[in-house]
Amino acid sequence: MPTEDPYAALFRPEPEPVPEPELDLEPAPVPATGRLFRSVGASAVEGAVPAISASQAGKLRSMVPASAPTPPPVVIAPAAAVASVVTIDGPSEVAVKARGGGALTGMGVYAVVIGVTVAVAFVNVLFFGPDINAITGVALAMVSVIAALLVRRADDVTAIIAPPLAFGLAAVTAAQIGLTTTTFANRFITAFFTLGNNWYWIIGSTLAAMAIVAVRRRKS
Image 1 (cartoon, one colour):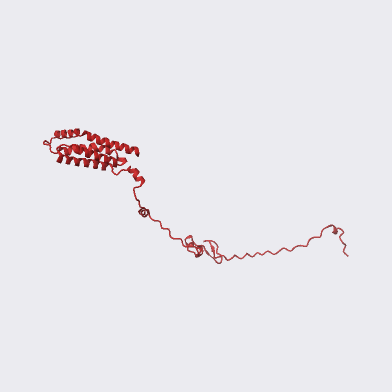
Image 2 (cartoon, rainbow, N blue to C red):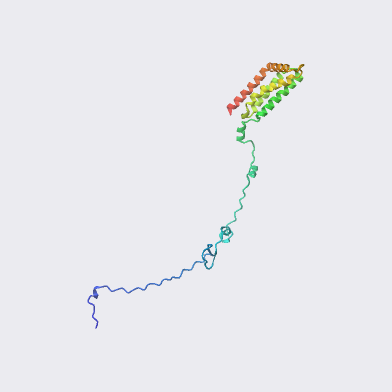
C-alpha cells in the first residue's frame, strides 16, 4: 500500500503543461497587385518578367492615368521670331540717351554747314557782286545755329568747328571767281581779305553755336 508524502501539503501543485501551438511555416500568399517584375540578372521567379528600360516605361498604359489629359506640346519660338513680334512705336530711351536727343551726326553737321555756306557763297558772287558779303554771312549764322540745335550730344564739338571751316572753304572757292590773275599769291590775298571783311559773321556764328552747345550740355 503506497504511503502518502507527509510534505506534499507544503508545496503548490504543479501546473499542467500547456501544449505549444503549431507554427504555420508556409509563406503568406502575395496579393495580386499587378505583374511581378524582376531586375535584369536576378534569379528567375515564376510568373515574373524582366524589368523594362526607362524609355519603355513611358509607353506603358498603367503608368499614365486614363483620366489625365495629354499636355499640349511646348513650342519654343526662336529669338528672331520673338523679336519680329515686338513692335516699337518710337525710339527707345537707351537710343535717345546714346544719341543725345539729336538728329545730326558729326559728318552730318559738316555736310550741312559747309554745303549750305559754300552754295550760298557761289550764288552771292555770281548774282550779287564779286565779293562775298552779308548774304553768305547770314546763311552761315542760320545754318550754324540749326546744326548746333540738332547735333548729337556725342558730336556737338563739330557744331563749333564747322562755321569757320565752312567760310574758309567758301573763301578759297567761291571768292576766287572773277580773278584776273590766278597766281597763288593773288588767290591767298583774296581769301585773306574775304575772311577779314567777314570776321564778325565767322566769330558770331561760332560763338552762337558754342553757346547752344553749352546750354544743351548743362541740361543733359
